[in-house]
Amino acid sequence: MADADLVILGGGSGGYAAALRASELGKSVILIDKDKLGGTCLHRGCIPTKALLHAAEVADSARESEQFGVNATLHGIDMKKVNDYRDGVVSRLYKGLQGLVKSRNVTFIEGAGRLVGPKTVEVNGQQYTGENLILATGSYARSLPGLDIGGRILTSDQALTLDTIPDRVIVLGGGVIGVEFASVWKSFGSEVTIIEGLPHLVPNEDEAVSKQLERAFRKRGINFSLGIRFASATQDDSGVHVTLEDGKTFDADLLLVAVGRGPNASGMGFEEQGVAMERGWVLVDERLHTNLPGVFAVGDITPGLQLAHRGFQHGIFVAEEIAGLHPMVIADVNIPKVTYCEPEVASVGLTEAQARAEHGDNIATYEYNLGGNGKSQILGTAGFIKLVQVKDGPVVGIHMVGSRMGEQIGEAQLIVNWEAHPEDVAVLIHAHPTQNEAMGEAHLALAGKPLHAHA
Ligand SMILES: Cc1cc2nc3c(=O)[nH]c(=O)nc-3n(C[C@H](O)[C@H](O)[C@H](O)COP(=O)(O)OP(=O)(O)OC[C@H]3O[C@@H](n4cnc5c(N)ncnc54)[C@H](O)[C@@H]3O)c2cc1C
Image (cartoon, rainbow, N blue to C red; front, side, top):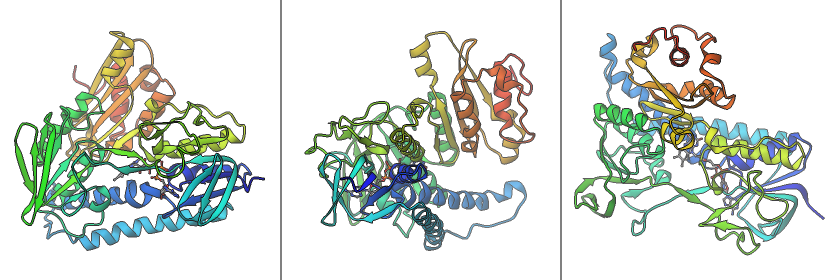
């Protein structure tokens, strides 16, 4: 006899979204987490880092106030107060989430769970069997072989506990997490160097966006080394010393290792129960079923984009799948992505290179420069919106860079996911003066009727 319609192991973005949606659909739910409800995103990821980035933006505004005729002086950063502000945001959201889960009659069990049957989890010596089971145990910050975390060598988990600002910091990895921390520390006054083994920062983005971000970071005085791989690091009382494969060395007070996140799926009985896995990831089909009947996996333990909103959508999807609602399959390619460094990067759909690989020369691209956008001029930001279109067809990719451009991702993802043609968007009205107008202008131009655009 099952103890609940649904047992969920892991109460992060994926797990708790599944719990909330399943209970809405009348299912009984047991949600198990060994730590705080909300997982990585709420406690060690999205929310605390974005609070730091907001404090960084405030610092930059004070520092740059004179260019707007405002005479303010930045006296310094009180890291303890920054952390208090950040923790306040997290704890308000945490309280809200706890209340939500309680009000939906989800049974929350605190403790480390282990799979002891195909649909049975043991926690605190008690066994819970579900009609269905969802694995949602998330991911962990990876390091490199021979690079031990400890002392001056940190991952994002430890970086978020710092109550001081390093004078000099090296960030290993120019992906999303790396550039966000680099951006915060630079705004807080550190000397920052990013080391990225691939030829560009944010290497998963459209190359034009990466190049613009590199220009902007250079202008901000953020140092970076691209295309040469990390070889080794040592630490002593004086600091941390990093050597690259070409022999070049860098010294700093701290080294942040931001080389990606691995699946947290081992040592919890998954293999013993026969869950199909590959290189540590739990394998699922497009409907998020594992190879075991009635067992699903969501979020960061499945191969693909590691984003909170992907986890939410996975969770909702599985709850609806279990309830027999036949939800629409979620394709990773059309999941919006935002990197919240200064300037921000936001994208959805295919990059130009991916579109070329898929459609050959049958594509058109257009780059609308924010130089022609009133609000961006007011803010003093540079950047662009780049559209990738299948010729005479839908817009399949939108790529943006510039201050606050993350806020434009909402319309961008509607355009790509609704397979809009440039002509469909060109007739829609965008309020003036907003950065959102740049979205309208880009589509006007691609539809052959540019307004505020130089040829
Ligand atoms: C620094 C940083 C910044 C980020 N910023 C963003 C961002 O801005 N936007 C964005 O979309 N994404 C961001 N992410 C990614 C986002 O946090 C993850 O994609 C998301 O949290 C994944 O959700 P999940 O449910 O798969 O896993 P998690 O949130 O990791 O949740 C897994 C849960 O499972 C629990 N668990 C694990 N093992 C067990 C066990 N044996 N028993 C019981 N419980 C267990 C854990 O305690 C945890 O609560 C960021 C991540 C990091 C690290």
